[in-house]
Image (tube, rainbow, N blue to C red; front, side, top):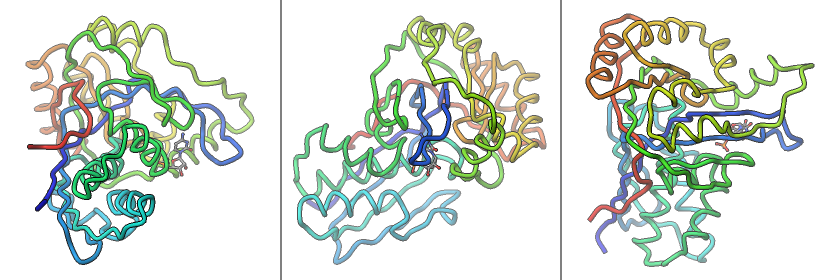
Length: 299
Ligand code: C5P
């Protein structure tokens, strides 16, 4: 086989409920993921040794060593099968880097699926999901896509029903935010406070099922938002700009610094994106639709 290409979506968390820090440093979550149609593509080709290359507007920000989740996916899969991870992984990157949209996780899930096909291993879905969970908390969702509730670290998924398409606008910021730093700030801000156990909001799950953007807008929630705003106060102006331009609601995407705005339809999404792009508060804005399928091998 000469090469396998996998397309993989970004995500937005429509609810990110965060519990107190656990003994292992992670936080229990009720994490409602929605896959959106901004995609990376990862191509796996036979090679003499493991190499990673990347192209795209933010390619210079992507590590090409074993810290890249795509490389780690190839290594873990090869180890399980007692083979050498001799593969060239080429990433075509369109998902914002370090933006809270699971771009690194997406590349891990895509590389895993691509290598499994290239090496003709025929791993089951369960085996792939197990490796995904080892790679990172958000990686299993990148494989399955659609909409899902993640509990535990966010890696134990239950698929969710979605009754329609939702129109999003994403405002991209300059520079990234480190996920561990944002969780660390969450811990600092909640010090001495009893953090309730995270639970999925019934109103939010009902809004997803109904496909009604107004209902979903009223239920969006991200417990990491105060921490992201504390580390990056300028995000408040981005949120104000999107809301003033007619978005139904806006929130920080995951650990940020990307902000996500829910619009009532495609036309409104376009005008919110135009207003954000024209404002000095963010680098640029992109529209996207959800839900969309997870990692998929392209013919
Ligand atoms: O699982 P992943 O490697 O993507 O997590 C990155 C970091 O985010 C962790 O090292 C931890 O600091 C934080 N995290 C957390 N609780 C979670 C998921 C991530 O504290 N449920």
